[in-house]
Image (cartoon, rainbow, N blue to C red; front, side, top):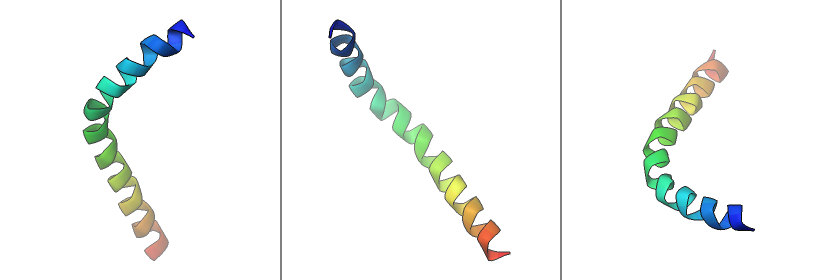
Length: 39
């Protein structure tokens, strides 16, 4: 219970930092998948 209470604010504050990092990774993987399917 205490660990969830401490982890939740950390996750919320870290989300704006993680999002710009995850977004290009998702975009690159989607583009790579489209290129593979096209061949």
